[in-house]
Length: 319
Image (cartoon, one colour):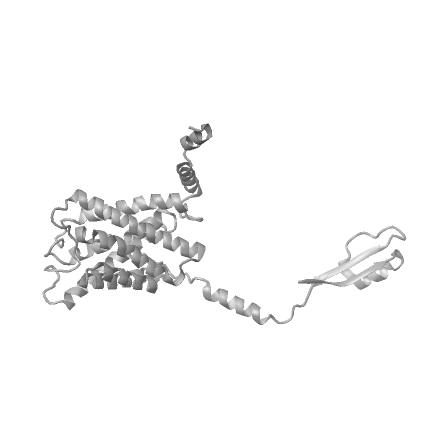
């Protein structure tokens, strides 16, 4: 804040005296005789001690500012969350248990790692420019390791479950569901799930719309497709969980790894299609990891897809 400390109208007769009083605040040359000089000295006002309102506002800003943790801490959070996710989801392989577990794990890790907990989610955020590829690789490995550790812990908990023997948490299609149908079913479920996840995250960050109920919304995003496709394929929608149990166990439906390729391929395909829709709806990140030239090309493609030339032409012609 600035205030006027000195305002005077002086004649040139006492200019030299006032120059000595004002010092360096006057930098203009000496004016002609009998022309008045308006001297305004402006200095910074002493605001005194800060107000309590300013202190409280600054404290609230510091509390609300996200803490950027190291990559190792974020990966550790992904490992721990996927560890519990795989255990609980394998003990009770129902859509309700999986959705509730995911909501809890997202709530616990959202401000630490972003709560991806799924390579498909990480893949979508990478394509959108939010997650750098080297971070995405470490995230995916962490998610897989967490699920593998969870599968190994199951062998210690459940009688009859052993490493290299019968296991839990494996996924296999129902009778009559071919590989092509698995591709369509799991791809559709993963598409719906990842699309809803990004919509919740984007709206929370940009519109402040969901806040603390965001984890519940993400759990519902898993619940809906899991209820629909669960009876057909098990509703995995998570490559880390698909790969984890067959890595540890070797007996049981799906535990021999005979369906790994089609499940993982379907889920990554669904996530990729979801990323394309996200591009059309929300665009890329403001500061993506890829070069600005790539971002510019993507934005041009998105703009062309949003406003096709033939649609504009038809509207203008009135066809």
